[in-house]
Length: 271
Image (cartoon, rainbow, N blue to C red; front, side, top):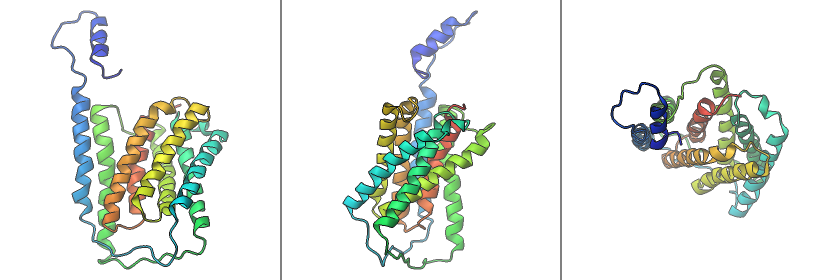
């Protein structure tokens, strides 16, 4: 509706003393921004190649089976949605986003707890890096900055403002922390396979939609779910790239948290 040519034409017709000019073309900016977003998303692949390959992998403990993973992921997300509905999330000055952030925080904690219960005697060891820790740390900082640029710039140029203002300055790190806890819990429960990691995010998206239908979450969440689903898929694709490079275990959740949190904290309406 915001970018429909009919909407823009109606607004121009309502203005007094209209001087004419070319007809409005509101899809130009979103179209260009979409191409920029795709380009920046694909640009992450060669940038991640700067990371030195690591031979490390989790060993020394049993992995979570597919059935056990599914039996843990679905109840964790469902319980997270129910608990978030009981908490005073509306006190956060971020309408809709407050519930989503708390839901992700609780679900992440529950996922990590479920992973610990599923593998109570697992011991994780990782092979040493093939290079010094200085270069990976520098590349990780570059990737985090790139993630901010990749999600914030196209949205800001083509869709809506993504510059933190007012309360959004302190809401942004808070929402980022909630997203990080969720992704760390998903990483811990997935225990390696990228399909399970991506599917855990998909389960969270479905649970959010169901929670909105049942009245546990604000109804406006249904409008946010498609965007959230796209962001979840985006961060899962980047996580796969980093996993193939043998990146440190915390890097994919950290980069993904930025992708999820920045649009949530800067574009959703303030209460």
